[in-house]
Image 1: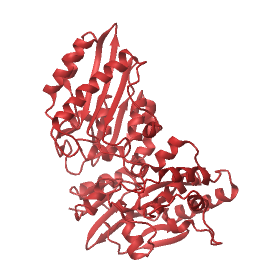
Image 2 (image 1 turned 90 degrees about the horizontal axis):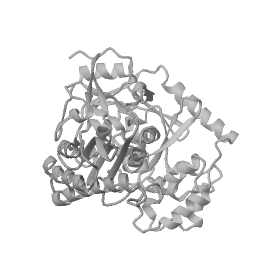
Image 3 (image 1 turned 60 degrees about the vertical axis):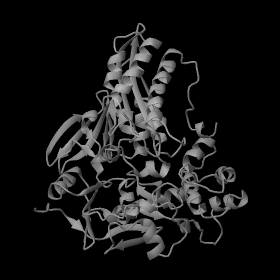
Image 4 (image 1 turned 180 degrees about the vertical axis):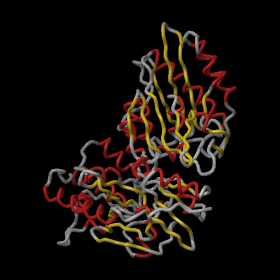
Length: 497
């Protein structure tokens, strides 16, 4: 098949600290963690789980923010592939040391509060705290918990570490020295990449392409219809680190500018497939508060900084957190192959386990999420063994409108109950047009057992899943008929109430 005629280059260009790097002959599947430890001998960054859960490998990536400065975010180096550093600045724990040899304020705070115990997890914690420091510091316990939820301490030393976060403070965004530093880095990064062509690595061990527009992406997927599309790597990265797969070719969408926007138009939100959870969080929270809270509990901050809403949909996981909520809201997705686009209801995209309504060479371009109509109440509930950073056992999302005591509109969608995220249509039919009372609630719960035949796995038994799903209908009933009754922990304080 003929390759698209694109302007390309074969070197990965990035800054390692303040030092410019241009790398060739790099395995496209080499992780940032392995490059740091094996190639650079920078062993401050640790390997713990190798799947993006423990945070020992936390590093910071900086990117120009488009306004002449830099934006910094924490990511897991263990599942980040080296070519994804292109056009970015990589910071590790080694870069915190000031020129005079003293400790950085974050490191000094960890020393003074005795925040380090066995020490293995400490570099990852320091990097998460450093990101807070770069953003101006934080004193709110809930916000600090959010920042640290992706860093696991086996010594149960969170109290002193949280105190270190408060003690370290943060740099002021108005500090002229810091503003100049960020401006200089942004200028140098932009100049290094601007007009340089698309990154295209063609190595004996595999190929990697990083298009910069959706047109380039579409052309590449026509030429390579069997390619693996890589977004944040929070799922694909584990194919390499845990399943030891060779992936060839890889087409990375993290540099596709027109897939990274969130737009509001005509009472709906259009989210590009390359938008990360972190970047979609606020907008989805404006659609419905429970969607925002749901996104906040997906993985850790490191995962949300890398993982994308489009990737969560395209990988078709039956326990993906966002699809049930988006289905309940009536979301649609735009699929594209070449120059041809089509729009389908999100619920119809999922056919069966591991199979979606997507042809070869076709990709998810955007997600359209309508705002709930006037009078519609939206509720979403995630059930997992841990409050933060855990895979869902059951996820329920409901959009309900009650008028005169009757259910006039009702959409219910679940994750973890079948081979795909899906609506509970028999449950919906049992409620629509009925009085919203305990009798209709019982009928809806019975109908739910006809909608689903859940399976048992390490997260939950089939009996537990069904009971939980039915109980979540009770929770919906209480919250819509007696909202004064406390039914859940919400907000950033929930993890320690």
